[in-house]
Length: 167
Image (cartoon, rainbow, N blue to C red; front, side, top):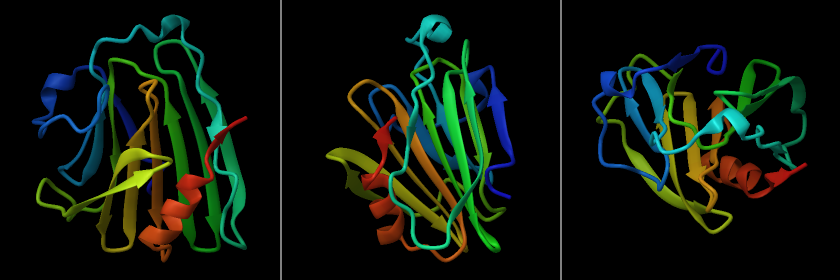
């Protein structure tokens, strides 16, 4: 599953990145993964994990798991399913580490990215076969990710993203 293969990378220089995508985070597709590289300017040790989640999901989606991490990696993760399909929502406070999320073996630097806006912030959407990702950063440097395997459309993911709120 898409959300099950997230890897924390302690050295951001291992990835050849494209131009910076957001103020704090650089998010790009590379080597079958969506790579999220922090800028190295934040000190997350005393930063609490941001607790956000979608307020709306299409009918039939249920929560499978939730986790909140702190210290060096302040992150919240919510995982949902609808039969064979999966949807993960991740919110990260600014931190200097990088992580990658497995997409599809055909995902790479040439994967088409579409720009959009979520809650007034610039966002990027990628789709490779049945896997898609939507990423945006708010004015506080928090990174928001929706990762989906299945039949939801870009419009569906944008609607879910538009419903994201702090708990």
